[in-house]
Amino acid sequence: MEKSKVGYDEILEELNFYKSLFVTHRRSMIGNLRIKTKKGERVWVDKINDFHSLREYDIDEEITEWLNPPKASR
Image 1 (cartoon, rainbow, N blue to C red):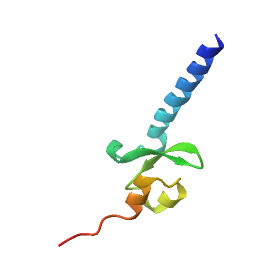
Image 2 (image 1 turned 90 degrees about the vertical axis):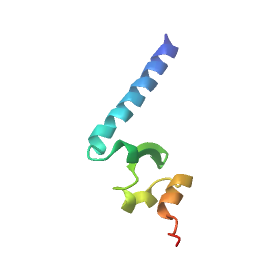
Image 3 (image 1 turned 120 degrees about the horizontal axis):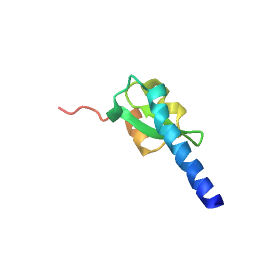
Image 4 (image 1 turned 180 degrees about the vertical axis):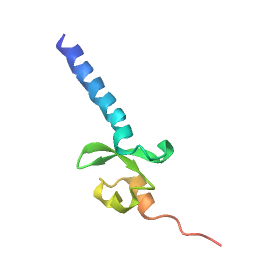
């Protein structure tokens, strides 16, 4: 019984995280949203609208790429 309670709590937490997307980023296009971490906690990040605050998140390869866009070639 304890094992199923833990599983239920994890699923409920996951569901609430995905539902939070509609509260925190209701004006964002879904394709621009990514799940990143901020001080170890999962958060939604809009790579277009949240550009000014990207340095606040835990740095990974994708965020580094967003902060250093490729230079245009001629």
